Image 1 (cartoon, rainbow, N blue to C red):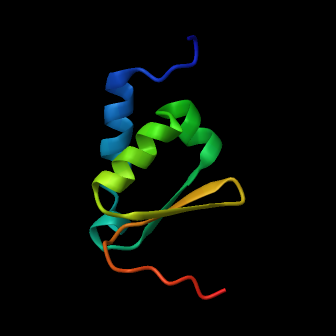
Image 2 (image 1 turned 60 degrees about the horizontal axis):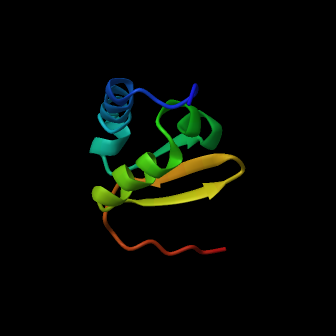
Image 3 (image 1 turned 120 degrees about the vertical axis):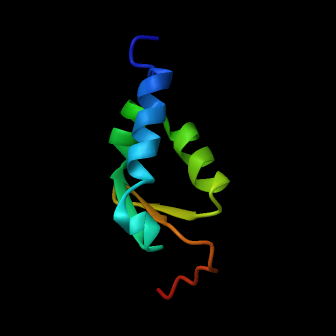
Amino acid sequence: MQNAPHRNNADFWIATVFSAKAVARGAVVRRSVHWVAREIGVERFVDEVRGRGYHMVETGGQFIVICNRNPVRIIC
């Protein structure tokens, strides 16, 4: 598979995303669905988000990760 992400690059990518200041503050990070698929694969990203107990929504070609474990209420 020519476009499969390389394990070491995926680990580095994950470490970089989840070391952002927004993550430490419990805020949100946003990444393009296409970029995630190309860099590490969507399944791996979902596993990483779920493993941290965070929440993730997808809209408009973007993944929005809510970097805290508090309940989420979608208003509208």
